[in-house]
Length: 371
View 1 (cartoon, rainbow, N blue to C red):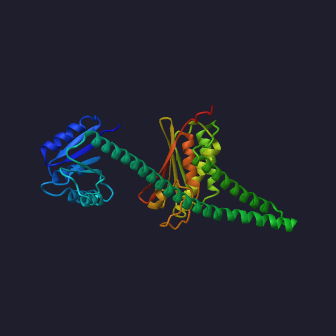
View 2: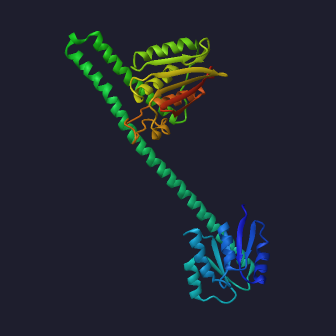
View 3: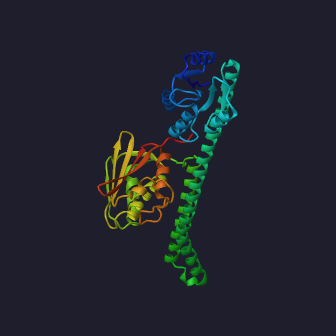
């Protein structure tokens, strides 16, 4: 049980002595004393759990002290207060005390058992109130979190539906044309159909991966030994066919061997470069550098055209929609990069520098083989 701070405010030394002796029987009570209202208010501001208050003080009445304390501490922040009087307290005075914040009354001579029982009862009530208040705060936080998640889910579904509609419509149109006119079943049309179906498949795979990560799981990776130089050459060759921006690769340690999941790395590399091409300044070079730091393979991707500040702090949010960026949605690319890097046992960071968007990722040279 934590120590409870009890403040005695009474101008009579003898009264404070008696109250202090009674409270001394309880080891978990810390007793503070004040001989006037001003000192009592100072103690109240330092934080106490219960106040035993004489209603007749030399500088103010107990009722005035309660009102001033509430003004300073705030409405509903008063500790439990017991009003004490040397004489019989009238019903009018009791009502005034209750209206100002007192929760119990005692008169001199003090009965020790009655006083300790009253304090214990008030303490129990406060503990219950604290518990209820904490439950209310937790419920409010959960409710706010659910509201935020609902809004995010709605935005996510709108954006995903919009992105899915384009390749789906193209695939349906191509399939319809070939069905109606067999003569149009050319290699070009079949390739167009396959490309759009691959786009849909990739989008669904990204959704499944993000969903799995959000549920607390990682993305399963299967490692194989391979030369880093060959992997980078393949990654760059694939992307040079997809982006119009010049792609500049500066790699160190070309003879480095890595034990990686090839497809997962290509997804990371593709998403970083395609994101730079989509959101950076059109036609400007995309620079990719690679070097070793101990057993970590470090990549830095930079392009002209900084991230909007609002976006910078939300790049790991799937389909984040910025109100200050011309881009309506930031899709799943960078959240997938983050999830894959973490599944590797590495990490990724995003920053702006001198008008450039810079992404730095670090991956261990060898995956831990699954048990």
